[in-house]
Length: 218
Image (cartoon, rainbow, N blue to C red; front, top):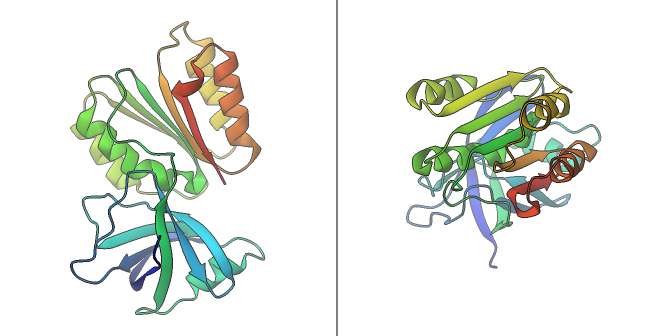
């Protein structure tokens, strides 16, 4: 896939060490991508993947959301980039994606900045859903909370549950394993490390179909 470039147009500070970077592509050269996919940024410090947090309906202005990783050269480089700075990338990449809502209840489980790829997936799900949609987000730094509250107010079938950090696994267990025997739900899980694979394994062991539990681990 050919390398492309975009310029940093603006930055939104979410608090803590978390930022959204808005990358503007040249006019008429918007990126076609599926909700949930990511870019491979070709940085001076090496190649780093970053999920696209914006919707495919805005193909010329891409949003990526990241936090400053301790000793992380990639995040340090991007967060120090001046307005107008160039970011080179390839993509889109990834199979953790959603083109339309499943024909069943859809549950998104996001930990911290794992909400980034789920955000456009959620928008697409709400636009196409015929069954309830839930989002559980555990984080120290709230992300897009006003937007999520508006979506919850606008869609009767959507439930947004903000959670304290380190509580996502326990709450998912309580709601989707212990509370009932319904195993028709579809899950999309994103976050860092063992939490993600632990949730995947627990849901599948509880009787949810393997293909109904999709995940992205960073």
